[in-house]
Image (cartoon, rainbow, N blue to C red; front, side, top):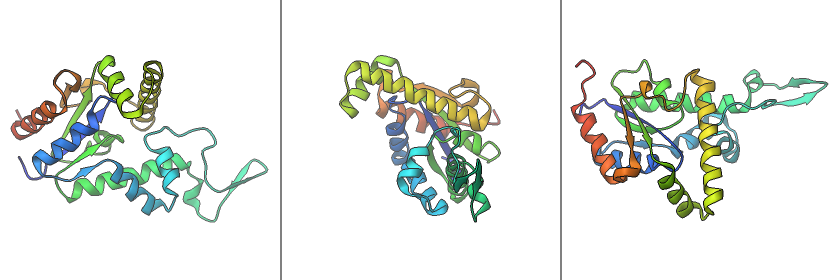
Length: 208
């Protein structure tokens, strides 16, 4: 593999995308960034961890602003706090993504990483999907939900991720034209898909 490849992996909820990404990082022996991005954003924003986690991969909501309100206006000693909290979190996470990519090869999960790194050299963008039945099975196993509740959670989370992606990129989440590879983890399982992604990246040449 080229030493400076950065792999971004977008994923449908409960498609096995995060698990696949972790396995790709193991196969290629490169760093993996997912929840680690939240940890770094907590440090840079000095927001509470639960606040950062709440806004993780969520579009900015109405009146989602720092500081305190008086008479319809917002007051704060820090001008950066006039930004919506969700935007502050996203900006911090995007900075983490850029720094991680600048440090060397790695696997980065979600958070518009393909868009954030669109001008970065040697980035390989993957989107992992799966059919609904496999996603429901995975969701029920992971969260202990009924089938109906699992379907609701999947639809809700996909909608949130789609809105988040659209908010920051003005493009559609999961659109195949945004990615170098779109792959179905439900058909082959995460082990096989991880091997395929690793093999694809090792052979991939954007000039051909």
